[in-house]
Image (cartoon, rainbow, N blue to C red):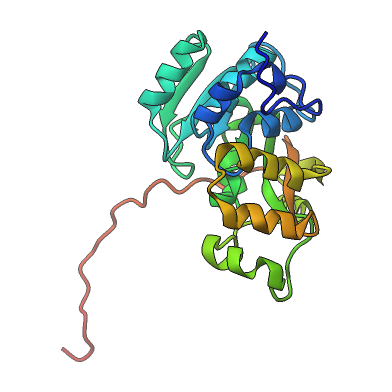
Length: 271
């Protein structure tokens, strides 16, 4: 076993088995993808053979982790990161028969209705999931009774008033208006009636895990590191939410295209 203790944390025993160089090489944001995936998985019902969509998978570390730890099949979808590179990472991990990378936009997914048993999104849902219509769109790809789970950076409570002074420099630079609290995500989902939310909470001491990750993955990001230290968990952290698609709710049909129906009409009056 490697003696390299970087990114080894007793809070995440599954993630601790993975080499820090592999994790750092596959990181793509302000969170350790394995830590957040392990935390989210504690509230998911994952069983071998299930079909799971990892939406916004980055460099597919979370996808590989989900298959190795739970035996699920994973479709690793991301818009920004190369499916070719992710496929090589998947091959190197020896899981090419169960993890399937693809480059896809979260708003135009190439899957059939009710194809997945679960959808997960690790530190990505803020980029598309805040749209009021999005859950209705995403839920059609999950079987009734299937789960949708997210874990991502957020606020412990909503910042409805002025931005706190100690966050102002970071806020201007990063523009985190899409970040929200667990309570916000719970309300955002529950008001649709599409899912029953089983949990919406924040990770205890999440800001410290955020800081510890950045210190290893992006030590040059001094603004974010200093902001986390100054905030010290007053506002910033990690949040998660898990919902189960209700079988008694009919989804609003997706509009794929509008049929042509043009008939010439006079344009002006009195002509």
